[in-house]
Amino acid sequence: SNGPYPNPDYPEKKNQRWKSNLSKRARSCCSKKTILRRLPILSWLPNYSFRSGLADAIAGLTVGLTVIPQAIAYAGVAGLPPQYGLYSSFMACFVYTVFGSVKDSAIGPTAIAAILTRENLHGLGPEFAVLLAFLSGCVELIMGILQLGFLIDFISGPVSVGFTSAAAIIIATTQVKDILGLSFPGGKFLQVWTGIYEHIGETRLWDTVLGLLCIIVLLLLRKVKDIKLGDSSDDISEVAGLSETVSTSSRIRAGVSQALWFLSTTRNILVVLLCSGLAYYFDTKNKTPFVLTGTVKPGLPEFSPPPFSATVGNHTYTFTEMTSTLGSAIFVVPLLSILENIALAKVFSEGKYVDATQEMVALGVCNIVSSVVDSMPVSGALSRGAVNHASGVATPAGGIYTGVLVLLALQYFTPYFYYIPKASLAAVIIAAVVFMMELHVFKPIWRTKKLDIIPAVVTFATCLLVRLELGIVCGIAVNLLFLLYASARPSVRVTRAVSSDGVPYVLATVDRALSFPSAEYVRRAIRKAPADAPLVLDAHHVQGADFTAAKGIKSLIDDFHARDQTIIFYNVKPSIAEVFRGVRPREFLHCAHRAELDRILLNISRGIKQP
Image (cartoon, rainbow, N blue to C red; front, top):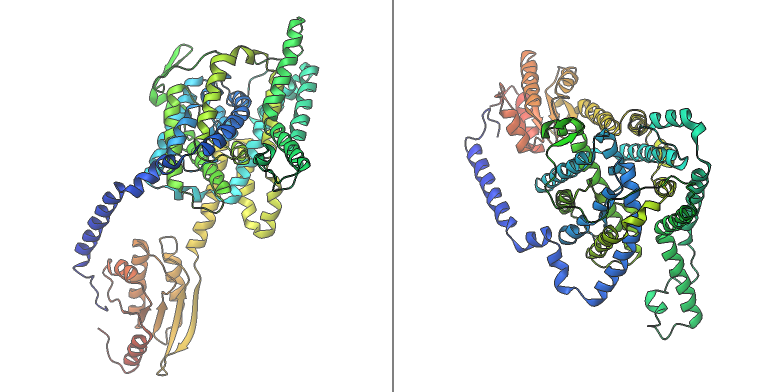
């Protein structure tokens, strides 16, 4: 084990292990277990019952009533015509039923995806949003196939908090002008507030009144579901009279509680319907006190491949130009969509294992297939997931009913969307995103670890004042700098020690992996050790090393040879020893056991040369 050259059989054994692993992976891809994981519908469909179907129908239709007004509003956030929100809300529901592994997830447009889409469209048209959905799906699918979910781990909690809070403020800001009844270009935080300041004299009173009233009503109705009149044991079956042991009063209380819950859950559609009815009434009187949504293209979208070119004005954008225009959004949107979807899955998993790889695959397929019906990027939303969960959804098949309801709305009800006041849609968005603001988390971050506030603040400020994608990139960069600094400055503890035979030596202990940022630092620290006794480098805590570290170790061995001092490597893992041997050091004296170390030290003290 003390020889200077690597084991000549090592490369051959390594190739054999690689071939064996490849063969095992190929066999596992075709196994029944893998097929069931990649097509989760095969796991629950054989046992699907009427009871499950009824639960899915109730949940799916309830979510559909939530999705329709949200989808129209999110299209506005994304800077797209209203119908594109609805186009984004049905196909993914069907696809996720086959590939989705989380029953509570309801795939569709989200506030985060919408605002990122808006920031990268630059007002160039829906074709860019559809292409973004397709490319996002491709990235998500590739990440799932290659099992690159670990990349999500680079988005730390503070970065996520800073991004989400800034995004919520930006989204709410873009809706303020609709609340005030103003119309001017610009969708960034500073642009909107500058525009509001410049056009404040054009504020429409009745739009403002309607918008503020809608926000108040939506927030109040959100709290209504928390009113519990019946016991926690009361449920829908008792309300339906299926339990004869429950008293009439208990059933009434439970029924009222369920009615309040339904009122709270469907608050968006109820508010939008009431406001639309009011606008229609004024229209019959030839009055238009509110800015209306206007004409929504009726009917279903055409099935066609995603646009790989687009004509805007007199210029035709090629695929390369379109991708260049979308820029970093091609990677940022899928990353954040995956983060949002997996976070949702973990919330409602009830402690069960969440297959992140399958969720990435499912989300990728949803976006790719949805792009053929002119969808913008889609993901799971916590608000829809909460409605699904509270509605008692049994399987992902609940999405089928949601998708069908959206299709019916597109086919038969789009003429009535004309009368939806923009202020009411803005209120729906503001009432939803206000709870995305996690500014209250900054205080516990500060109490826990003050340094973590830096990436949170950097992300928040950059997202708010510059661009969302740049903000999250800056936050991740700051986090990586912290990690690199910690990696580049491992703790090197140097102490004097005595072997069991009474031989004195110098003990140096490194507390983490040796890599290129830390190699020179560790070398300098160990060179400062006393030179009057053999030095033992304890590598017990070293879990990895790279080429630069190996070169540093070789230089360290040369340094100690030059000053006629023996250096012994102790507790070096075999894989790390192979890395060190790879650079052919002058001598590489190492041992794995205490008795062997004591023997080497005793031999050195007696002047016996080591092999």
